[in-house]
Length: 250
Image (cartoon, rainbow, N blue to C red; front, top):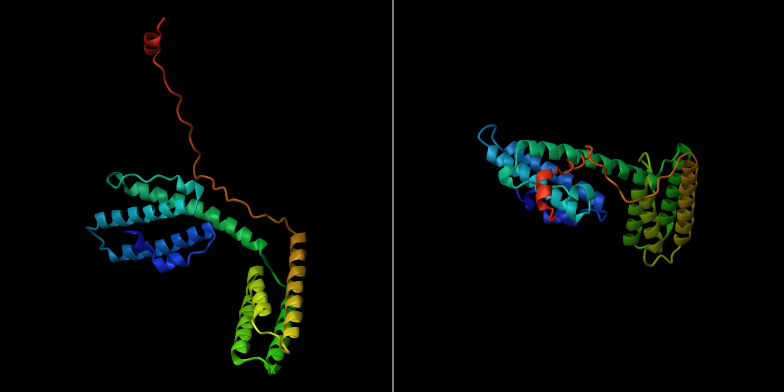
């Protein structure tokens, strides 16, 4: 299997900008394509095809690790295909799982720093703000249908975000920025929009302060992956005393 058997150009364009997130998503897509290929192969007399698919999967993943600067995996070597064995693949898959676990858990901690759980009272307050702004938008006769529909869509996005266990602050900020930046908002509902965005950001900010006071915040830092096995030091070089004596010129 070659690169485009595992991921399409369109899927590559849609990968996240963050290197670690992009690597995880690429591996997830590649694993799906690899599993699909395995299901297509017959149960017998497919040894070469299986070996080609396994080698291709490992080759693509390691190439992506180099491109996305995943330190531990970017230094991982792959043997020539004539020396490739099922044991090479099995070990690689287990090592890949080991590193992906570290990446995903670290990403989870980072996401936690950029999100906040909302209590029932705060969630109801934010929903009340949304309902009030919907009424203001509906009653604003100066809004065009296009702008009104866009405002409704933004509020729908925000209400959907409220169904999550943890509200992503960046998702709320995106809605707020677009609400404030929507072209031509010199209209009756603009005052309601500014009141709404101020109230929502204040409510979320207060909730985040309360959460941070009760836990230790881990600041974003470069991910340092650790290997799955202890690295054995190189064996000390052995010296032949007779050889050394022969080389001494005196």
